[in-house]
Length: 527
Image (tube, rainbow, N blue to C red):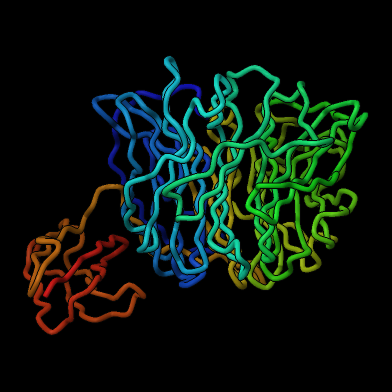
């Protein structure tokens, strides 16, 4: 969660990206600090991407962190204007977004909205039926006081059961206490069977002979759901009577968390490491094989932070030894961190991370960085040569030590890798997007991206026979399209003036999209 908020002047931005090899697009264009992005792909329409991140927003005369989202309906070539999910009290700030589509294309966004001193707020879930163009009123899933003084609302992850089992459609959220709550701490989960409107009672993931113990302050549980309908979560532990070494355990449930079975993923001596590294870890499940799981984390077993992975081919009962993903020289002092991973629908695997192999300094401080990826076709037994995602080497900035930039995110669809991350190349921490064709390692350029201001307006909405379009003068001479929700063009015009009438008498009642140069509006037509 973010320790402090920034008070700065607003800046209006307009970003136009030239077509070039190895292109990154700034999709946040924030005034100073954007962090912890998440990206998801709609399984019903793979051209529909949605990104969410933490960004500064002016509210009641003060900058607060809000969760911002943007959607694309053409595979990331153009993006909608920015939405901001709501705050629930004056003075609240938001943090820690995650996104998940269900198998029918319903999109969920999960995030914290809270304040400290006095501690209040919770974890909220919003839904989108139009691929992230708009959101309904969020529902509260966790309250700050669901577990007394432990405040179980930090780093929520949301996952959806997209299996064909009786558990299909179930949502799960995992969480933990925030960093200002002293241990002993435990991790938590809740489940929902009604699209996140109501939730089960708060419960712990650890248990039995697989407890977290009293020494771990931040026992984050990273969740996944298998194609066989099992809810899984990986978490750290150190209890000498259970295991003389620190460990990672896997909890699994076939009954929506009513009961769990446990297994040991990893035991390892603690390795000294720079605490500035972003050491978040991730568990994912293969959507094509119910027995395959993958776990990845930074690990300093070689003396510096490497990206190390584990894999299981028997549903998590046994795990491989650690496999090093980054292929720079071992023990060269160059640290890797901020890892993420995803399976595509065929079960191929990709890992992405922040990498300092080209830095002139060792360690974290003053070390510039790039972003890289590697793929695997054998569930993480072996990995491809590492490939660069970032289009330039990025100088170190002290912003990187701030909370709120602990994770990047990626989504792997067929042969295409979509990646988002925060970096400081502009002197600010902004969110960058890349679209990479993996088989040829080529990046696809974004045509144009508008700033957060809406350059395309239409009213009345809903409308009947016609509506008025008003545009920014920058759109004059550009095409404007009316499409259905799948992107099929139904009508087209060329903008010649900043205000004009659009006739739709031949179209049936329904939902339509008005699109021009990255701006997208949802319109409703009534009879």
